[in-house]
Length: 115
Image (cartoon, rainbow, N blue to C red; front, side):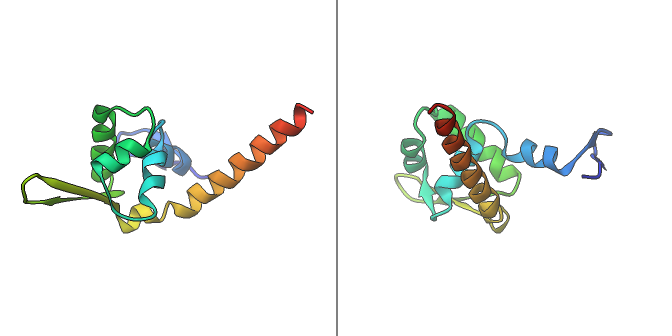
């Protein structure tokens, strides 16, 4: 992995950049929930056990700024807002699939170690 120079005059690698965009406890889980399609805020909140409304709002805003999530506001009463992955956000699917496979194998190896 060859270092790249960021605009902040800091040397980093592409993996660090990726982790900066999708890192943290919630972003990958939010992305996972959006893979099947459009979701409203309440649906996301119910699906993500333990996340506060404030944290979900913050994470969605960051992912929208990074171009991963699209926020569609419908001008109606009551207000309706839907979230979906952008084409860029959808490109994370194979990465998350690989993470899922790795996690499954890791858990299996941990179970074997306990026998």
